Length: 328
Ligand code: 13P
Ligand code: SF4
Image 1 (tube, protein in one colour):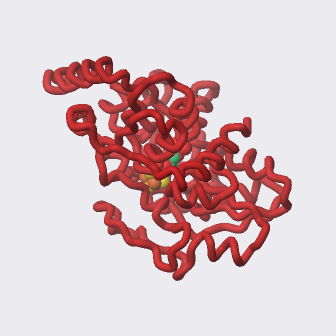
Image 2: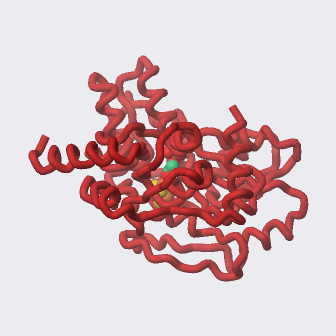
């Protein structure tokens, strides 16, 4: 390891012990950040851990909504997000109750445009349009949207969550691609919002055809945030940790990976004898890459940035997350 990285790592480990902290990392984080984490996982796994582990502090190496979920589930713990500006543009594509979404700046998302919202519409407007229909909120949403929803879901459990509801129809926000994919896999009617992830949305059918041509023996795994026509041409659609489990269990030896590049680190590390090829070379989430070892160390030193959800939002948001966590 480079001496500078080793020194940062040692300092972080000392703070971690001293503060009884748990370091959580999403599968998309930089390699060196994944390596210092107590746990690396997908959104569902990280939510479960945040809800149950005994510690005083959680340092969440991910994006804002993930740290917010940890704080919602464990209000007694101090939750730190090392990079204040690490947000998820898709989460900001829906507001709970404001006619015009507040446009937040996320550098690196200018091309292609990341800010396409349903015109002057909020979740509450949508609920009024479809009275009585339950709302399933992807965890990639703000605490306010979770609070205004009936249940949360992740890419790992969206179909099971929808099936757990007694109604024949559901509203699913904010990812149109995840919603369409869920609709393909349930008998229920799914009413979708118009949000998307800029990183996954950029994958095209031509990318799939090119990757298939270049790697004819490889299995194509895709994240459900990809466009539906990409998912239709994939062999296996699942969450980030679902891809890790699938690749490890499969007798196949070559895989095309249709998600953010950070997952390649664990795929290579946990399956050194297998080959993994990115579906596109530019599937890099700039917000996930903001967190560095330097920012984790600063987070410990400065106790920053604290993510705390006000109780009037936290309690209904927790109800939606708890309902999700009860779905097997
Ligand atoms: P996972 O829950 O599959 O890890 O996905 C989270 C995410 O942000 C995908 O872009
Ligand atoms: Fe949000 Fe997409 Fe980044 Fe995931 S990869 S955090 S959905 S912008």
